[in-house]
Every structure is written in structure tokens, then in C-alpha cells.
Amino acid sequence: MGYTAIHQQWGRLDASLDDLGCGSLWSDVHRVKGVELACPECRGRVFARTSQHNVRHFYHQVRPHDCELAHESAAHHLLKLELAMAARAAGWRAELEVSSQSRDWRADVMVYDARGQPFMALEAQLSPMTADDARMRTIRYKRDGVEVCWVAPEGRPWQRSVPSLLVRSPKQRGEAWRVWHGVARYEWTPRTLKAKANWVHLDCSLNDAVGWILDGHAQPHTGANGNVWWTAPAYLQLAVEHARLEAQAEANERAATAGRRRQQAEERALRAEQRRKALLEQAAAEEEERQAELRRLAGFFQYVGIDAMLWETFTQMVRSASGKAVFYGQQSPAHGNGLMVYARPRWQGGERKLAGVVCPDPEALAGWPADLTILVPDQTWLSRIQTVARVSLKVALLDPVTGRSAFVRVP
Image 1: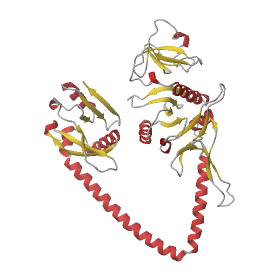
Image 2: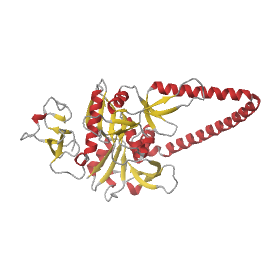
Image 3: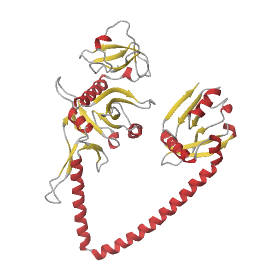
Image 4: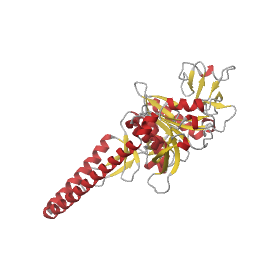
């Protein structure tokens, strides 16, 4: 079940809003014959219904196996609604189940700024998720200019990667949802440097926490243990002041043994200079290697019709999409004169495996391996391949000009 549906004339409906977000009433769609509504996720037919707890929502008459909204749990469903109501209580416009234009993310709750632009996604995360998944999903949001706060009922490994809140559902009807971890203050009374200082997590209402975050009164902070939580700028300044005083005390201790410290500093400076020279040499070697690679691929750039600067952006998009280290081989006549792309997991050794081919000749795609991805930099190349495709193809459109990516299955 979900909170949103598509009407052919009214557009997008939001069951959590009194006017459904389009100026209509719930009575216009609830138990009204002839009203056809579609799921925004799978486009299957849905119907308006009110639960036993008087929560309005849309449900599928026949649940499709591949639709997340159709198989959403009641706990996830209710937490989404609580997040939306918390954002609205703070005075912000919030919509449920909002997808990006490229459909590479769908926010449980999207909050819009005063200009009507999306700026904060509130994600109810009850199902398992790895830290890498959390980082990649957060990056996809930030790529579109959207910050994100992940909300869960218990501690998860991905807390060490992304800003999050841990919440507790009310035990009795009428009680508020509580945040028991994720909003912290810095406790330190600046009387003496040795006074105890630490971060203390607050127990506050979900409405308060969401309001502080959306109003900018709380911002993400990564603690010494690597966990990311929300705190006020004043607490960050207090922590910085504490660190500054500690640094000053250490400086005073260094002054007491100036002679020995000077010698150590000179040795450190010498090593730093050596490291600097080594880094400059390494950077020069890497730049020469980069230029050599661009010269090697100059003929391919001309064949594809792409600028060398855009090629570097294209390569970054390939790495981002695959999550792996990427290496280019040669143009392969056996693969339509396309450029061979090899990959292996980052930070690991091992054999490079063929991962795709960039811009092969569309006329050579007959008998193309079904699991081999074709990479193209623009719509022109995609159209050429779609026009002559004689077998099923997987095509990744990675446009370095717009920064947009899409994955297309060409029948």
C-alpha cells in the first residue's frame, strides 16, 4: 500500500493531504465508481481505502511482485506518514513517495524549500541496508542537490556513513514518536581544560528533531567513533573551542622543551619536504600517464565525436555507476570497433574483467553477448543503436554534458 496515486486528469494524489495535493477531496476517489487510479511505481491499478486506524491510503487490487509500494510493511507505511507530518508541522511542504526524473531514487518523504525545489529527503529505513548502499544512495540524492536523513528504529551499520536518526514508536495511542539517538549536544563547562567533555544524545520528539534539521538548527557532524549525528552549530563551536584550548596547552608543553622540539621539527620539515617532492614527482608522473592515455585514445575520441575533457567526466560517471576501478583497453574489431572497458573491485587486486564496450559500430551488434553492457555518451549514439538493434542489448547512457545517467534495455 502507498500514500500516492496517479489520476489521468488530476495528476498526482497524496492521501496524507486534505486536498490530496490537487484540490480534490478524499470523497472524490474513495468508493467512487468509475474513478481509475494508478500506482506511481508500477502503473498498476490501485484503489482508495481507509485502514482500521483511519489512515487513508491506496492499495493494489492484485499485488505485483516487483512493486515496492505494493509490498510495503505497515510499520514502514506509518513511519513515512509520521515523517511527513513532522515536516509539515515545522511549516514545510512535504510530499510522500517522490521519484527523481531519472527514477534512480524515490524518496519516502521529500521536503521542498521556499522556491518549491526539493532539498531534503526523509527516508524511513526499516529493511537491511549496507553502509556502501547508504553512501551510494546518499550520493545519488546529493548529485541532484538533495540532502537526506535516514530514520530507523534501531542501530544499523550504515549509521557510521550517513546522517541518521533512531526513533521509538509510541506505546500508547496519542503519544508522540521519540528520537533516542541521532541528535546530540556537546557537554563541557569551560572552566578548566581537564573538565570532562563528551557528546550526549538527546531524547526528543520526532517533530522537534525534524524541525531542527529542516530549519537549519541542526547539521550533520561525524564523531570521533565515525558515527554521523545531528547537532546545533553552537555545540560544534564549543567542541572546536575545546579542541583549540587543548591544542594551545600542547603548544605550551612543546615550548618548555623548545630545543628538542626544534630539532624534531627540523627533521619533520625535512621529511615533509622530501614527501612533497615525492608527491610532486608522483603527480607529474600521473599527469604524464594521463596525457599519454589521452593521446592513445585520440583516434577513438575522433571516432566517437567526444572532447577529451568530456571523456574524463564520462570516465568518472562509469566509475560511479559501476562502483569499481575502470581501465580502458583497445578498440576491438570483434566488438564493432568499440573501446573495451575492464573493471575490478576498488582497493583490491585481482584480474580485470571485461565490463563493457564504449560506442561499438551499431551495424556489428548482431549476436551481441546478452550480458555485455554498451556504454554511450549521448542520445545520438543511443538512437543509432536503437535503430539497428537486432538482438536484446543493455545500454548505459552516461551523458558527461548534463551529468545524467540512464540504463536502457533495447529490445
